[in-house]
Picture 1: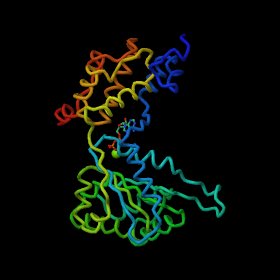
Picture 2 (picture 1 turned 120 degrees about the horizontal axis):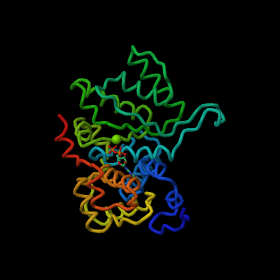
Picture 3 (picture 1 turned 90 degrees about the vertical axis):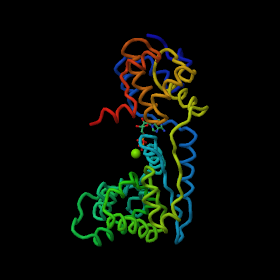
Picture 4 (picture 1 turned 90 degrees about the horizontal axis):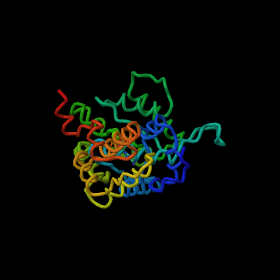
Length: 300
Ligand SMILES: Nc1ncnc2c1ncn2[C@@H]1O[C@H](COP(=O)(O)OP(=O)(O)O)[C@@H](O)[C@H]1O
Ligand SMILES: [Mg+2]
């Protein structure tokens, strides 16, 4: 067994992993990891900025917009983890604190499901499903008593899956909730989410879009590849940021972060199981990745 410290191509935190057996290394490779690329850090800073705003009647809201599979949920999850809840047992008044509450906009969104999602995120499993008004007042009461300071609504584009009347009602609810609690809202979704928000003049004024576009084949992209490579416990260097591999991965990924990560991690797993220990163009081809466009073609 080689000694850790022998792997200068790896980040210090990943060096010890490189000595593990194949199954545990494959498991590590398949586990999501956080990479703080520049746009993600900027987004986190923008969300932090909105959280630190003093209460006022018109709170600033953010809308994190980008294509599917491009890192939006990872960013808001990271943000939430950096503002963790406080359990009731750990507060002086015996009330739990949930500074950042995150929900998903339900598909087929109606107000019952929306407030149901909030109540669930607050840890309530049972609530009356009959009346919107009761659920709305319970949700806002609990959000106040747990001192929720920000509501994050992921998959906001799901608003558009409702009828025109439902859409209008949901957008009204969002406006109402922000006003009532005087907390910032952070919407997360695709360009469709932006379209939904823009259909309501008052909301459009209050939501500042924060774009998370697909990647370009630039220095930031190559840095991402190098960081990723340094975190994957392969015993030999692959040189992912070298032109040949970088270009190949970029073309296959169509610039979408989740695809880039998936191409590299699949190939890395194959590199471990085959004993190759480094990612090559051939390995990438052998690892059976289908590009997003190809996948859409396969879908029937
Ligand atoms: N900051 C990050 N660091 C490392 N991998 C990431 C990061 N953000 C996204 N990914 C990868 O991309 C995938 C899709 O990210 P996700 O946040 O679910 O996208 P979205 O919410 O935009 O659809 C993740 O499962 C992960 O593999
Ligand atoms: Mg998501």
